[in-house]
Amino acid sequence: MEHGTIEREIFIEASTEVVFDVVSSPEHLREWWPDEAELSGVPGEAGRIGFGDLSEGGDVTWVQFTVVDAVPPRHFSFRWTHDEGETPGPHNSLLVVFELEPAGTGTRLRMTESGFRERDWDEAKAAAQHAEHVTGWDYFLPRLSVYAPKVGAGA
Amino acid sequence: MTTVVDDDLWSAVGDPTRRRLLDLLLADGVATATSLSEHLPVSRQAVAKHLVVLDRVGLVHASSVGREKQFRVDQAQLARAVEQLTEVGAAWDTRLRRIKRLAETIQRGKDAQKTDDDK
Image (cartoon, rainbow over all chains, first blue to last red; front, side, top):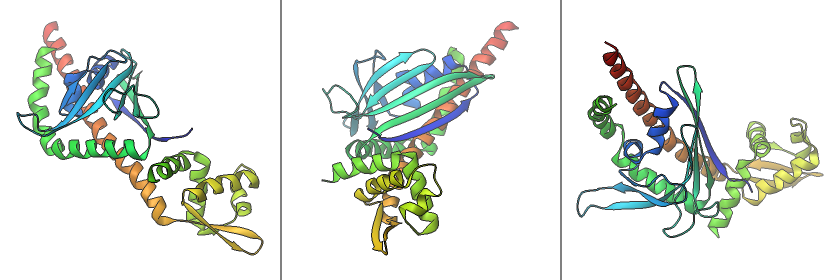
C-alpha cells in the first residue's frame, strides 16, 4: 500500500559521526526538535519526546517515540505518534529514516518520513505546531549561541 | 468516515503517474483518458484506472460529454492534499536546517580543538 512520504536531502559540512550524533542522541535531539527527549536509543525500547513548558506544573505534550534501527554512523530510524503501550508499526505511526553518506568533506543526509494518514498527521501537525511555536528561530538562535561553545569546549 | 477517505487521499497522490495526471489536468483544464494517455508512457486503460482512483477520493470529477468521459481537477480537494504535505514538509525543512547548523557548529568546535591540540 502506498502512503504519503516526505523526502529531503541536505549536505552538511560535518563528519558522518557528528551528524549521526546530532540526529540520534537525546541531548542533541532536544536542540533541533522536541523540548524534552526520553529515549535509550536501543531499538524497540519505548521512549517519548515532549513539547511544551517543562517547568514544574507546565503543560507538556508527550509523543511516543521508538527507535527502529541505529547503525552508527550511517543509519538511524524511528517511529513516532503511536499510542502509549502500543507496538509501533505501519498501521499506527510515522516512520522517519535518516541515512548518512560521506560526501566530500562532509555528509549527505537523507531524511524520509512516511506513513501519513489523517490521524497520524493530525498528531504530527499538532506536535510540530507546538514545537514551532515554542522553538522558532527567534527562540532557537540565542539558545544555540550559548550551546555551541559548550559543545566545542567539550569536544 | 473521514479517516478512510484521507488514507485513500494520501495513497492517491502517492503515485507518480497519478501526480503526473493531475499536472496534465491542471494544465489542460479538462481531458479524457485518451487525450491524457497521449502524454504518458502508459495505455489508455491504465490511465482510466488511475482516474478511477483519483475520482474515488474526489481529486477529479468526471462529466459525460459525447462518447468519452471528461475529467477535471477538484481544486479544493487538491489544495487540501497539497496543504497537508506542504505543512509536514515545512516542519522538516526547519528541523533539518537546525540539524545542519548544529552539526556544523560542533564540527567547527572539534576542528578548532584539534588545531589547538596540534600547536
